[in-house]
Image (cartoon, rainbow, N blue to C red; front, side):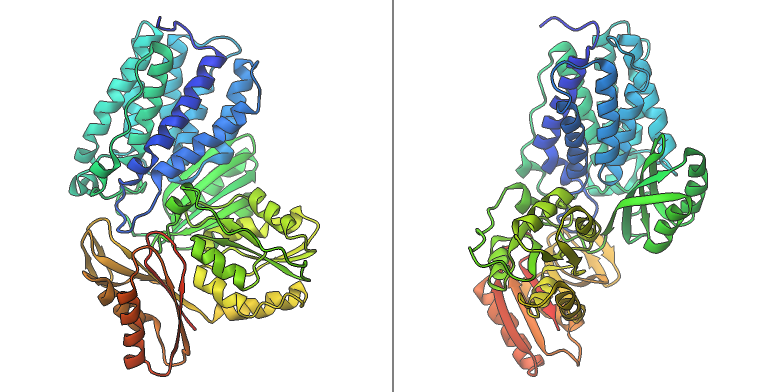
Amino acid sequence: MTSLTTLTAADLSRAVTTYAGLLRAQRDVINRLNVFPVPDGDTGTNMTLTVESVVADVHALGREVTMAELCRAIAQGSLMGARGNSGVILSQMLRGLIQGFGDDQVDATELAAGLVRADVLARQAVARPVEGTILSVARAAAEGAQNASSLESVVHGARDAARAALARTPDQLAVLKQAGVVDSGGTGLVLWFDALCHVVAGDPLPATPDLASTSALPEVHENLAGDVGDFRYEVMFLLDAEDDRMDTFRDGWAGLGDSIVVVGGEGTYNCHIHTNDIGASIEVAVEVGRPRRIRVSDLNEQVIEERWVRESHVLPDAPVTPVPTTAVVAVVVGDGVGRIFQTLGVRGLVTGGQTMNPSTAELVEAVRGTGATQVIILPNNRNIRAVAEQVDGLVEAVVRVVATDSIVEGFAALLNYDPDADVEENYRTMSDSADHVTAGEVTRAVRDTRTDVGEVRAGDWIGLGAGGVLAIGTRLDEVNERLLRCLIKDQHELVTVIEGEGSSSASTRAVREFIAVQYPQLGVEVHHGGQPLYPYLFGVE
């Protein structure tokens, strides 16, 4: 094809859509690059969801749009849909890129200038920029596009420089060199320049690497501060505040954590921080404006169900039963978990988990689908609570959220569910039941790391609890026993075991025998949940 000499609104729209397709295709490959020891979908997922939000806003415009209308949709979609550290930074880059585009077509000079703005705004958004990250790749791309005489030479110069910068990231960050990988955020950004080269010059799109060839690679988490694990929680929210108050906000956050990214403008900002003080990070926002869409993730727990959600496992159909006085909607992962919850009276099931949070709209639809005027929501994950809390104001039904942070807590709450009682009584009794559960999970480490309980090697089994990694071992049965020793206390009476992918009848029998010998006073209940990545979930109450 003949290379383009200018970019029209249609061309730019096609580039964004192509980029979203590349991210979707390589999401899992990018997610393999993570320094956390558990199999978590992070950077690739966050960048994909961010760009998919942009595409949704762009497609909502219809076919005939001006460059100005398109740029507004890209800016709005990227700001409102940004997920995670990498997504927020990518959002700022897109906003910077298009900031100077006018109503007409974009030429080589304007595109090169946009790449410079993208680089500058991204670095301004990060409290402490670190080289060897997506920021280094963005700067190299901007520099590679300068002094180009044509649109084709701009996009080729940017892409080639970005690729070279990505290859250098292990020399800039020791954690990357130790893991033997390049930066994950930078990997995702290079695909943007591949998309531009495809649209402008007709270059073939890059092939998706074989996932099996990268299966041994640890995944590089998007911590721009360097060491992972200094801060336990990731806090994100949208902040409505006057622009002249944002310096005060940034100063307040400076002493609370790291990986600080604040992007936006004209009264709306997307804010991200890794911190050990959730309350203080939100209070600073309250002092200057109104935070909303608050999301909190525990970086140590890493409860991951993204693959199960993305592969569209089908939940069991809801049984046809009379509408109860109070209905229950639950967020679940695993078809077995869904069936268990239905036998306990759940009327609405929504798929999702830590990295694949269901939207407010999905929860609203599920609540309305129950047909009840009073509804309990079980989020079953700390990261989903804030979204669930918004539902009450969006539906005619009275909605209460029982703050369950795990499947086993949701299971325990349902044991005290009474469909004939009103929502307030169910809220009290189900919350009390969930509060008495201590949850634990077993999964496999994907890289070497250090923890409070010792060294973890890639392939080791690890047991997780509220304190992070509690048990390590080379055998599944060994870690099951070590984790249960950490979870079980004298006052406990019952252990609930939920089997997932990777469990076996022999290992489950070993769990039963261990409890019978070491804790003969405890009862044991075993259920098949079918959740991915975590062969065993334990609930002790």
